[in-house]
Image (cartoon, rainbow, N blue to C red; front, top):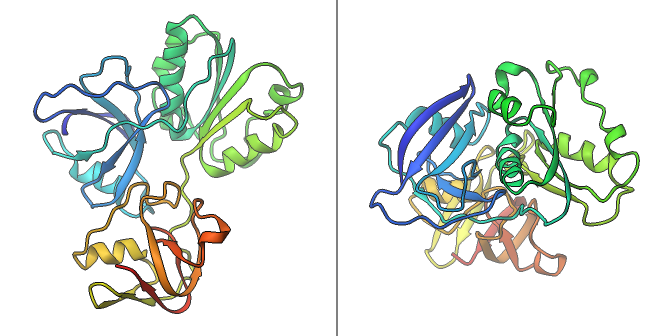
Length: 307
């Protein structure tokens, strides 16, 4: 797909409108869906779709620049100019709306992207909804003007100025369990807060999409070696790179998607070695035989992989 248009939503968030290169019909999608994009850096990243998915001729995403990220968002901001071509996978939806009568939509920061799409879809169907939008400041809040205009009287906007003591108090919203279904998206600490205050609600009423991936590398990580049995190569994985990134750096391609240990695409057979499993996919009984190479590492010594 080609970047048809770029629009700065905030100093750190850019909206990208992506159009097909060959004018093919795009698959439709429902609110909550995302696409996986191969960013200019080569990293695969998932971005929520913001636009109406009933009969799309473009895909619209919003990308927050994360200076300390693995390069995906930075390369989108710096290199994905209008006219730039990107490899994009078809939409998937791990965060679908349920068909109920009342909704509470909660967004933290860039987590507003699927929430904004959900709010518009629900409003078009005449559904009863409320929105709580939490962010650091108005200047850092994507789609704030559009949301205030479209959902006046149905949206609460809260800015904490980066001070945890000024965080929004969700207790009144969750004190008494109701038939309302809640859809939440935002950074991991934000999601943990919602989980903490909603633990007494019936199962299946609270729905999450966490935009914060697991840690790919950590400050105390050490380099280690990976032996690739099929190719006969041995690579050193630096302390600040994943196995997947090291393979890519060496010109070796293997399947990947989320690159955050959540989708299972990069599942690789482990022939030997002691693994520090950091993914959210493998069952305990699989961990002796498989590894997710986008996030997991060696606890010590060398790993031998069936690659």
